[in-house]
Length: 554
Image (tube, rainbow, N blue to C red; front, top):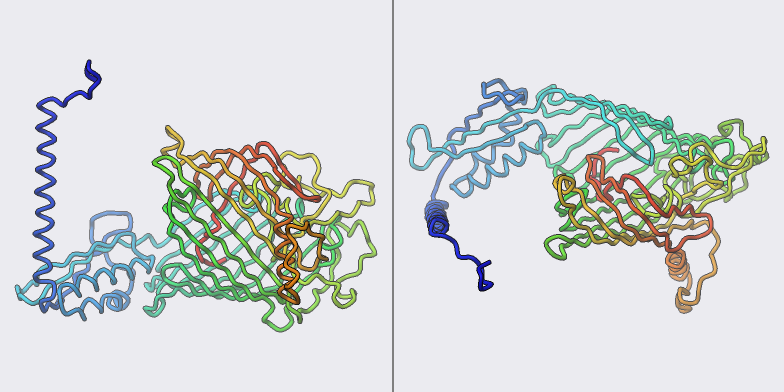
């Protein structure tokens, strides 16, 4: 500032540079207008494409030409619309569409297109130059990540375009420190037959060890058939396989009642819209994910059910440094009549505690829960309701006591890292759930900010319930109108119970984007909880996957 408090005036050199910049911008804008006017003058005149020249380059980025693995027939199929164009505007639009479709084949790393003059000099004709760089025919790697509160290592091998049809072949193997595993083989064919969809078929064998939280291991082996839209926004799939639930030695009665082997199948439809500026730490935009599922279609399936889930996220900047984030989720699973009873099997670890429990096959009609525990909704942890242990919010049941006199805890710690004993209750999940996250987020300064690190202050809430549980007494403020009766009244009461039992937490923390979701380190205050919950006030660490996940194979 100057002595009189005013702003310093720029020197002569700076004034000349500013004037030169303004003059350059004016010339550039004039050139753009002239170019646009010239294009508009000839855009509708008759024009046809007489030749499309394709130059291919090595996958490693070298400039030396090489042959393409992709079949010529596929290139001609995607470029046919270019030959059909009758004007410059149509050629331009057709070429943009053709490049988009070539990108959807997922076989090319780089695609450059140029409209050029006709080699013979014809005034009403042109040629197209297409430079293609194919992806490598194989890839693979090993990585570690967190999923379902378990550390896993994954090895994968992918083969691409082996037969020149943009075909993809993938093998993956995952193994976790709690002995969960997932082995899968997948085949995909992007834009099969030139249509805007990608069919896939896969076989798998996977097991999820939930002994620390629900005293069970859920294993399934089978196959999945699916088809996804080319833009990844929608997917329809059908899964069929054999499923097994093994109950732990101290499992609660509801968990032991579901142990056994049974046929499982499901038809799923997923629709995703994602307009956010980032999939992990977003500051602007919105997204939604709608997933519908119908299980038990195949004769002899163990459980028949209908399932619906909706997630919605929204973000908007408050100012240049702060943005508001809102995430809402809700879901419902309802059991349908007609499922076959699972084949009973002994519980894991010798069936301790309550050894006289009848198997599902011997239980009276209606005794088996209407929904399978592996398909229910679970809350608690950094990816749903912070301030509670992983799967530590919602319906639960007391574990059986061991014959050696020990407590009901299973191995592991129930979501509390370093805990010496597991919880005395099994998380059962809910048939109905709702959750809310609302927070303010700001970019961190320095190097953490450069990689996307942020700080956030938030309030978090959620609740879940079992439709098979008896109605609970409600506070007067939550009582539904007396005029509602029948099914409408019962539904209104269930929603009121969900609202009345909502748990709340608030906190401050750091957020770091990673390839596996956002890593959060939060200090949380638990504002309300219910009996049977596992509140976890204080420091809490965890990975939070985006609820708006792409609609891809399982």
